[in-house]
Length: 253
Image 1 (tube, rainbow, N blue to C red):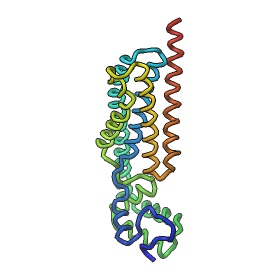
Image 2: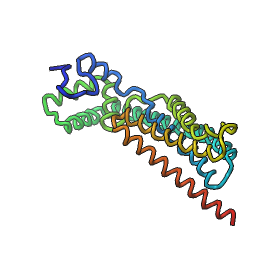
Image 3: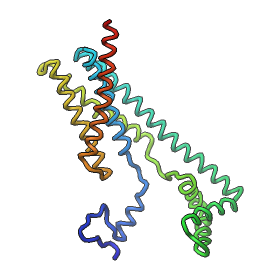
Image 4: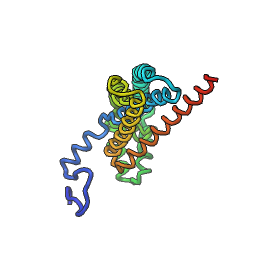
């Protein structure tokens, strides 16, 4: 029965007629989750790499703070701009292909009709239903072209705002990426070694927290998702420490 739930199971969303209609209406809407997670992880990794690099190179806490803060702003802007260009390029690609399909529909409509027919034939439809589907779609020019974009090219008709993508990426980078630097502002209360230790602890919590959030949003085991992100950050940080330690020995010699 429509809208009923199986006993003993917790479904991710409802299945009443109204719930289905509302869910399909917002499908393909703007989502900035990927931008936020990408910015958060990259910000935390790159900033903490500066901290462990300073530690491996036997640099002072003040140097770690200066280099970390400079890197945080510069890399945050760079990543936001890169994400902006990526989102802008994807939108321009969709616009270009749409114009191409509009021209094809205008100049070779029968060829485009045949493409629609073959697309739905591969989905298992047969005449007379297949012909009805083709006629229905090709009677509406917008629907016709939208169908070609989604079915032939695998493109999404809606894309997030390029400006919001860049904005979300930047602030996620700044907020989470700034966590490793927090202890270095408390010079009156912490010794240098304690600052580095506190940075390690806070960064580990941040890595794990971002992983847990990602796991919750994509319905993955929370602990495993958190551990995965923690380990990825740990490996990157370990490499930074090792490189700094080796270069210090090389420079010192």
